[in-house]
Length: 466
Image: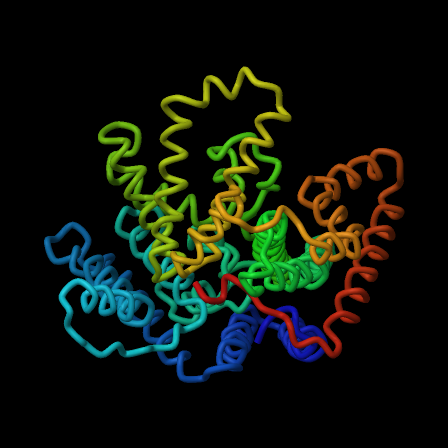
């Protein structure tokens, strides 16, 4: 089940909210969240619920084991077990085909690949489990002794299948104590509707346009169509993932949880360093806190540490060489900025900084899109004029003209116009007026989104495959 589906919006969510808020005790509400989350996750493929519950059980008891034997030599086995089990699950279900295919290529063997279908959300809930056990080990959080409360953390449908990657310490208090506040509930509805609009109206449209241009017959490709295709994909992946994060954060607010922000208008960044402070913040902070700093951070072997982090960041996104290349590409850019470019960029006009950042971000998304390296290199030849393809054709000009208003709106919404407008309205209006305008805007978002969802079959979530 996905958030941007009519079943979720008009059936699943209203029923869960109703049952949740008529329940008199928090313990019952927690079980409603757990049961509804299992139903949500099992909607498409029930078999993977077993893996989810097994992962949660293993890490719950690993935390208990570490706490019980803290200060002794055997406590570390709880931590080791967490790493072996979770990394093992990722290796088997996500990376086994990749490793076997490359072994076959190098050795000439013909080992069979298992062809496991990737369990939805495994990369997210595995990282959440690992972060919990590490935080217990380092005594950053108190161990959770109630399994149902731990399930509320791991299996909550708000963030289960596509993040954000929640830290246990961020919501530990809310798991055991949370109250209904109309301001939070109202804020959650508005945030969900905004995220739904971003996903359905912008991301889905951008994805359809990107596929039209990037997957067309090679004989029809032009320099303009290759650039437009990657630009549309850049819009799709941002509004797809940030829209999902908005919906997840909004759902959390409706149920009394306050999740941290996952995006902060990354396309207004002035450098690649700035971009990665704004994009998928929960993943970046995970690798910083649990990989980069333990390796030595800025204190020792900084170049090695940065390259390891970005190699892992790329590999986290998918079992394909283009994702590894994508991670190394951004790691290399970050190193160049750190040791050479930052001081130069700071002296340049803001417009130049933005253009510089966007250029390399868009190139990065081209690497991300093409899992076939031959197609990737062919795309780069087209984009940089190293082919016999024409500069443009009537087809992409017509496509751009027919979507020009949508394109302008999408570009505007990459900037903090919503936040800017809200601040201005709040400055010159009463609180009741602001609430009314937010409500009307949310109604508009939901009407437009539902209208587009009715009869539509194109509704992918890019980050579901990670």
